[in-house]
Image 1: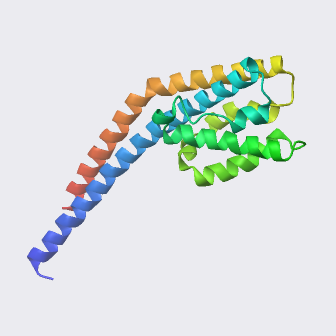
Image 2 (image 1 turned 180 degrees about the vertical axis):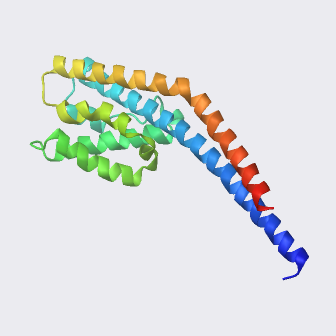
Image 3 (image 1 turned 30 degrees about the horizontal axis):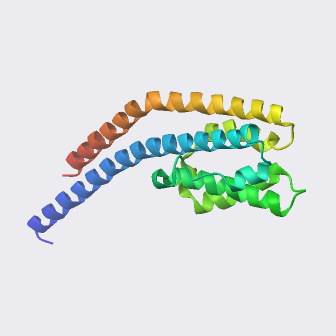
Length: 191
C-alpha cells in the first residue's frame, strides 16, 4: 500500500475507533435511563396490583391477568407493556393451576419475560431484590397483610427511583463526557 493509502487507512481506523468509544459512552448513558424507566413502570404495575387487591378486593389471579399496560393504552410504553405482560403471565398461570405457588409462577414468568421483553433486562440486581418480597409473599396472606406488603414494596421502589433520578443526569453526563474524551484520545493516539 502506498504511503498516502496507509495514512488514509490509519486516519479512518482512528476515526472509527474514536467514534466507537463515543458510542459506548452514549450507550452507557442510555442504559441508566432505561433502568430508570423500567423501574418506574414496575412501580406503576405494583401500584395497580395494590389497587386491584385492596380496593376492588379481587382475587390475585384476576388482578394480575387484567393488569393494564400502563396509565392509558395510548400512552403505554414498552416498559409498561413488559411489566403488564409479566404479571398477566403470572395471573394466567395461577388461574390455570389454582394450587400453583406464586413464587414458582413468578420464577417461570420472569424467565420467559426477560427473554421476550428486553426492557426488563435493564433492571439491576438491587432493583430485583426490592421485588423479592412480592415473589415470596404475595398471595399467601390475608388482604390486610398483602396491602402492607404492597405498600412496603411500593415505598422501597419509590425510594430507589428517587435515588436513581438524582444521579441519572450526572451519570449520563459523565458517561457521555468520558465517551467523547476517550474517543478523542483514542483518535489522537492512532493518527
